[in-house]
Image (cartoon, rainbow, N blue to C red):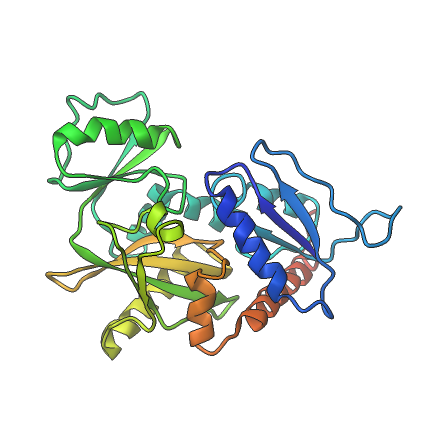
Length: 320
């Protein structure tokens, strides 16, 4: 098995930590793991083959790449061209889920609730004269990135221009969302043709929102698993998670993130992560463990999905 990790995105270090956790949890009696490390400048390190002098044979690849150049369909396309089975969503779902603006558009088309938003393109707007269709506070985000990198909570017009500059360093497409005084939740989805949703968790940030520092550096955010929701709310979130998963044509796995308006109780689909974190503190495996699927079994299941999908695609005809 090829474990692909590292990469050029701002989530390089998180990918390395995720890969370490995956490697530790894989049963060595079942898998021979070859590390394919991608440096921050995009160079692939050749793995050490167990049998010197031979090229490694790859039965399945497990890309544990977060963010751009890995979670966005690029590596998935490479593996498709190489006809190598791989864990996770396909090219289309990976690409559209990475783009927060396209995700929102598809969710809206499927009738799912999303926070009101505006999409801007770097170099095609003037921050000084920009009129927003909603009041402050707002969140300014790069459309294509994860782990809360480049996100700013903006409370006044004076803070808007610096936030747009920050977001534009990471992507040419910028998302501006109406601020919601809300609670933050996550729900894991697993499956192929008949996916299922896990018991959700609630994120209790130590800062104003769940920042990169709060996720990975400060160790102060708290997690409630299961989330403090009644049965009807839990069921509603699971239904929405599955609907969002299907709206972007996802496969195998995803973590769907939600906001809940404190005043109205309404849920909003916030993001879909097709390669969620797999570190020792990541919530995707923890939610499934709580839901009755231990980490090693989760990995076996995902690898099984990859092999099944590859076998199905081999039955397809591509010429007349």
